[in-house]
Image (cartoon, rainbow, N blue to C red):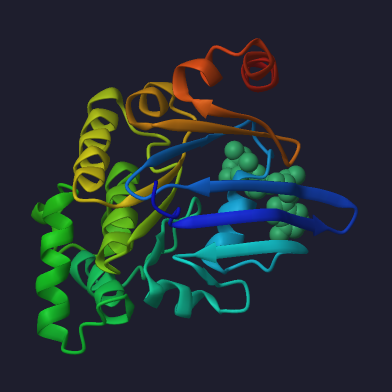
Length: 244
Ligand SMILES: Nc1ncnc2c1ncn2[C@@H]1O[C@H](COP(=O)(O)OP(=O)(O)OP(=O)(O)O)[C@@H](O)[C@H]1O
Ligand SMILES: [Mg+2]
């Protein structure tokens, strides 16, 4: 097998007295979709933020395409091809949908220098997520589901090689969830390597080649989706906590 696109070793993050992520190691293979699940507060977003570079690790190493990226700021990691969505979305509210996405194209891996080219790339991304009918709306006019689509389009506009998705289906109805699942399947088919944080189990099952489970910051399970999702320890840690 070829070298993984991402190799994380011993990654930890402490917030004051709390170990939000504790000595987590894993690899993301090229072209694979890895589901990342765990109860609220398990450390999923914290882990993703350390990989994308918006949060510094307390310890550990992050190797992307054979290169140690831990010292690099987030924008350099974006240039290398690491794209992400944010669980807490902050689009530029006064800009159009199109220009919110064009900004991603201006600053991403392929670095479209001219605004016209960036807007053309943005149109393509908005078509991909089904938001092309709203390109002239202001971002703050969008409802929740369309904001999720916008968030995904912004990440795609950076032309990532690896995509980190943080609950892009939260708050969507079943039809909308199926649409986003289809989008992610097509991205995978194009060769993207994808880490998906998701609470929507239907999506986790449908998308993931493997699943990793975090609980209190620790990796408690990792393996083929069916085996992990049927593991009694995972069901207790995850579903027990969620129900409560
Ligand atoms: N900036 C911060 N300062 C202090 N504590 C933080 C900070 N960010 C996260 N935490 C804490 O770290 C732990 C992990 O949070 P994180 O957001 O990574 O969880 P999560 O698995 O993404 O949860 P959710 O499913 O609710 O999104 C939580 O206890 C959270 O309160
Ligand atoms: Mg989170």
